[in-house]
Amino acid sequence: MTNANGAVPSYVLNRDELASTRLTLQHFAMIKWQSWMLHPDIQHALSNTPNPKIADLASGNGIWGIELAEQLPSAEILCTDISDEQFPAPLARPSNTKFEVADLFEPPPQNYVGYYDFVHLRLTVGWLLDRNWRVLLRNVLSMLKPGGWIQWEEVTAAPSKNGTSGPMWLIDSDWTMTRGCLPHMEKTMKSTGMWTAIEWVHTLPEVFKQYGLQDVATFEPKPRSSVLQPQKELLRWFLIEIAETMVKNGRAEAKEQLASDLEEFDNFYKSGKAVTYGWCVALGRKPL
Ligand SMILES: C[S@@+](CC[C@H](N)C(=O)[O-])C[C@H]1O[C@@H](n2cnc3c(N)ncnc32)[C@H](O)[C@@H]1O
Image (cartoon, rainbow, N blue to C red; front, side):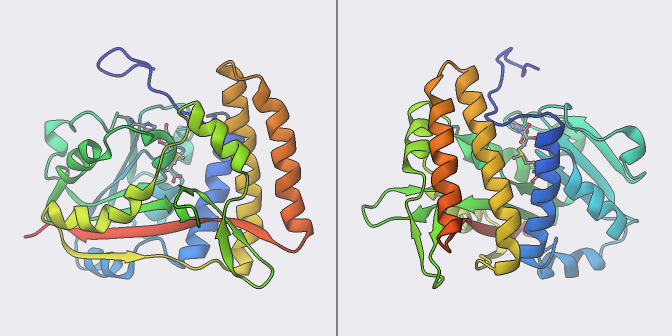
């Protein structure tokens, strides 16, 4: 799969059926963590919008759009991704959904500009890397109608004492949270360009305002016992896929690194601790 410039876009995770299962589990874990799929302000706005037009961008296997299609049968839901490898089988696509291939770094087709009541993004940090996410945001916002909403759900950085940050937080048995688990894996990921700083996620509300959005809000769910087990499974899988990609990219040492990281990871749990990631939902509305 190439983009308009003929370059092969990089993606550090897999797109096979196990990776798709990861996305499906992740979806249900995140919804449980947030307690809703649509932020209540957006739910309210859409309940007053006949036949709302909704786009789920970088949708992976489309699990978010598929779930929403059942909840909002009168909605028209577009799911796009740069790759169609994980798109569901035709029979698994509700009749009010459609799936298309699109690179979010390219401007949307003219007929999608100003067409949507609501656009949704989730989990982009793993592929945005050091690319300019503001370019993507401009493309995405251009799809909104006046009065249309954006909801962007993302992993946040966990701060540490020495001022660096990474995606993983360690939860101690008394629920105090520190960052700094799996430092070797993080270091290798950074040195291979597979991980970059994600502090920008916390600036999303500010940038939404700079771009003229109104009713900007954020929501950051706190860690919760009932979500920690699926998160453990997801993070473990994530580490395995990342190590596979590193090995494919010539970093054979990632295999051994993975073994010791997984041991370290499992030992956190054996000693009564757990691992989680920070999570933030940012939303805003284009002025009327
Ligand atoms: C971690 S998955 C998240 C999928 C979905 N948003 C979810 O939360 O279940 C990231 C997705 O972004 C897609 N992606 C990567 N680069 C992209 C780009 N430039 N434009 C659109 N999608 C992209 C990948 O193909 C992958 O399906």
